[in-house]
Length: 544
Ligand code: TEU
Ligand code: CA
Picture 1 (cartoon, helix red, strand yellow):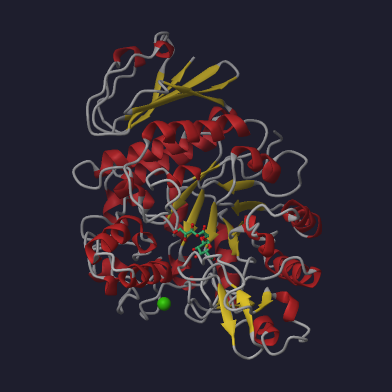
Picture 2 (cartoon, rainbow, N blue to C red):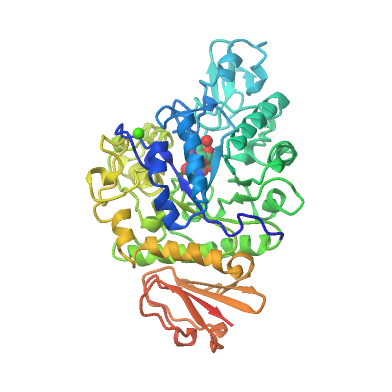
C-alpha cells in the first residue's frame, strides 16, 4: 500500500451546532470552532471532519442543504469559513467538509424549480413518480413514514429516503453530477482537504426495482467524481456506506480503483440491535460477533484497502455509555475502548467529547429531544400504541441527541458552551466531565487519547502492521497482535467489569517487551506476568 499524507492522521469530527457558541445565541458556530483550534492542536489531531455548515433550514440539522455555496447564518459567514481553513492550516490541521449529495433541502433552488411543473428543466434533478392509488411503492423513509411525498402542484410524488424536506437527487442526470463536481472544486479551491461523503452508497439508486444502495452505476459515478475532481487535489475522502461489507469496501478503497480513500462500515454498529428490526430494537451487545466483525474488516482490507476506525459520531449514542460503563468505571472503560480502536489498522476518528468521556444524556421527556429521527419515531410508536416507557427506553439508549448535547468545556453555566440558552440541554454531568478538568488531570481520558494519537505518528507498526485476533472465543477479552518487520505489538483488553483469566503464548517471550500504554497505573512491564485482567483493563506491549 503506497503511503499517503494522511496515513498517520487522526480525524476529529465536529458537529458545529454543539461544539462552541461564540456569540451567545445558544448555537455553536464557526468562530467558536476557531476559538478552540489550540485545544484540538493540544489533542494532536490532524484533520477535522466538519459536519455540514452550508445554508439549511435545519430540518435535519444541516444535512438538508438549501445552498452549497453559502454558510448557514447560525454558523457565521463565508469569511468565517475561510478564516477557519486558514487558522487550521497554521496549526497543520486540515478541514474535511461533509458532502451531502444524495439529497438537498426542499428549499434548494433546484427543488423549488423542479416542483413548479412537469416539464420544468429541473424536473429530472429529483425523483418524481405519477400517483396510482397512493404512493408508488412501499419504500419507507429512514425517518418514519413513506419515502414518497405527494406534491399537489404537479399531482405527482417525489422520493425522499430521509425527511420529506430532503428530496433525493437524481444522480443519473449528468447535469446534476456536473453541478456537484463544480461545487466540490469550489470548496477544494478554498483550501479544504477532502470530504466525508454522506450516504454515498445511495447515489446509484434504482428506485423502481428498489435497488437503493450499491446501485449498478455507483462505482462508475465515484470513478467519474475521482477523475473529474478528487484526482486533481491531494484529497482525503471517506464514504459513509451503511451497506458496505469487507468485500465491497475493496471496490471503494482498493489500489487502482480510483474512488475513495476509506469508508465507514456500519456492521459493528448494529450488534446491539435485534437483527432486521432496526436501531430502536435493543439487545445486549454480541461481543464475540463484535470481535469477529472488527477482525474481518482488519484482515480483509489488509494491503487491499483502508479502514476507518470509529465508535462514535453524531448519529450514534456515546460509546462509554453504550458498550463501556459510564458510572464507576467511566474513565478506565473509555480508555479501554479508545485503546482497542486506536491500535487497529486504519484511520481513527474521534467524535467531539469522546476524548473527555462524555456520556449519553439519559433524558426521560421527549420535549428535551431535538432530532427529527427521534421525534418522528416517538410519534409513530405512540400512534401504534406502544407504551411511552418502552419508546423512551429505546430513545435514551440509541437516540442521536445523545451525541449532540453541547460540548462540555468547563464547569461554568452550560459547561462553558454558551452564555445564552443552548439549543439543546447540556448534559447535567458537565461539572464533573469537562475539557478544563480533563486537561489538568494527567490521568484523564483526554491525555490517554493524546498518547494514542501520538503513538500512531511515531510507530509504523500501528499504521502498516498486519492484524491477527487472539483468544477469539474469550467471552470478555479482546486480544490481538500487529506484526511489522521484526516487531510485534500485543493488545489485551477486558471489555467488561470482571477479572477474567487468560493465557497468551505470544506473551511468553517478553525479554525485549516494552509496555506502551495502559489504563491502570501499576501495570507490569512484562506481559508474562499478566494472566488476568482487572475491570476494563487494556494494555499494549511492544514485543521484540
Ligand atoms: O446518516 C445516514 C444514515 O445511515 C442514517 O440513517 C443513520 O444511520 C441513522 O441516522 C442512525 O440513526 C447520514 C447522516 O450522518 C445523518 O446525520 C443524516 O440524518 C442522514 O445521512 C441524512 O443526510
Ligand atoms: Ca452562536
